[in-house]
Image (cartoon, rainbow, N blue to C red; front, side):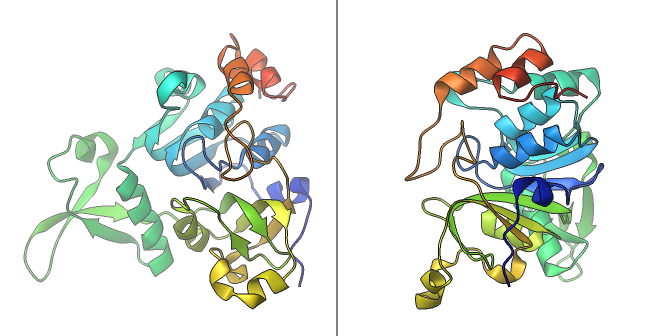
Length: 266
């Protein structure tokens, strides 16, 4: 059964207040087209989840659409620096920053996959994050060791941008897959935006091509260029001019207009 739908219908699955996860990493394979549609549809009070996030958080914070961000890293890296509108949101108190390590975000998503309320980790012991964010501890019933308990996160909707997908929801990721497979399995609903829609026979010939299986996919959107101005391996590089125009915007409205979103502040 075909899961193809247009971008507007797919993004409309997100409700105000939802927890929304994004695939990719920093400026690579970020589902920017879906993020811009979230802004156009006026979504607000969103809780964003990603291990290392940049443009998505900045766009949505500029639009006033975010209440919280759970991430291990927030920033553009290299020449583009920090996320200006995310930072302003946190400093003003409008956005709650749930600072994590990348692996604790992954652990939270794995908890949702396994159907448990939390998973224990050891590596964060001794960190100020325990008190700053409010992580709880748990005692191992076998060894008596005290471990950090990471609460599971099951995103209401997740968006992944991939190079190839079929109508059924199988998808192939070319290049680094980052945490996309974990996000896909943890989310209650999964939307794929794809550079190319391939015939189902492509995956039937070799099931190992499907990094994302159809069984976890809710919707597929054909969206060439759906990560711009971020990069997609084998398709296009970072559009530095467009990204710089957004970052140079002096007001949220000017920044969103530079990103092609008119009247996006709400």
